[in-house]
Image (cartoon, rainbow, N blue to C red):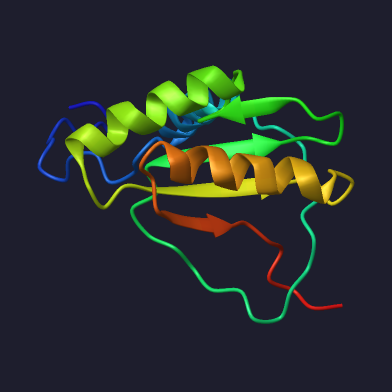
Length: 137
């Protein structure tokens, strides 16, 4: 017999090669990182005024934003006051408890915000909130 040649394969493979596992995980990590840049929803930059007594609101139906230049956005899309009035009437027809949140940059004129509040109330949305930065400072 050949000296020291052992052909018994009873022991099997005792080591696991982790290199393919690491390669697959790195590829998945890269795929998730690239895909996450497309998932992020673009936002409208406004600097909210601060208040210590702010609370959280739930079941928001309409989100109205006024930026520092005075542009109006409804649910993230640029809009006009007429479109907001029409959307308010449409939402109230479906849900009597519809509500709106108004977020206005602190550089926005007070009269502009009051006009929006009056507009949504005239068109049936009676519940509304003013969005603020809850950190007092």
